[in-house]
Length: 169
Image 1 (spheres, one colour):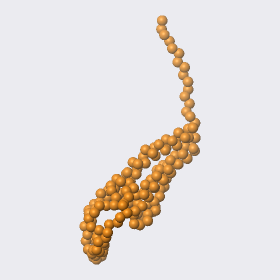
Image 2 (image 1 turned 90 degrees about the horizontal axis):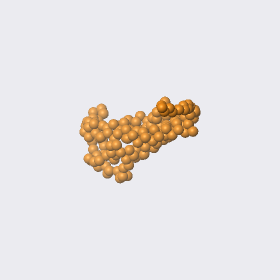
Image 3 (image 1 turned 90 degrees about the vertical axis):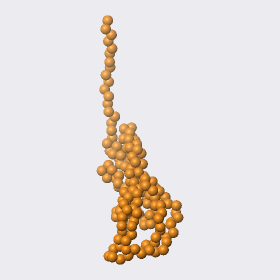
Image 4 (image 1 turned 135 degrees about the horizontal axis):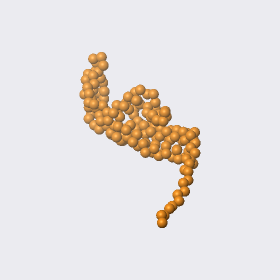
């Protein structure tokens, strides 16, 4: 005798997906990520001598964060983030530069340390120095942008997944 089994096949239906709700939820996840990145940028630059307005923008499924239309702050961020090689700085127009010598010392911030705070104790400036040429030692890349992206990658993925799950409920 041959054993037989009956298999009952039931159709599986996809849950209805509310497109508008899903898009709104994903936009909210992007906005939340922008706020978190903006907070990191703001804390990281809080001790800069010049005021820096930070912001973020959600565009085509991406979040852009950084100094608000401030070319000087953008340039400073890029120099610190990517590092600067040792170089010679020459005074413009054949003149001399005047600067307070701080002496050799440690940077206020460190590479890959997002939101690095300084102690609040500025170095005492030495006597004013004059020079036509200065050898700048450069500095190591801080890599803050990469660190912020790593910091937000997993929370962002969770926010997007929650946005989609919420639209399925």
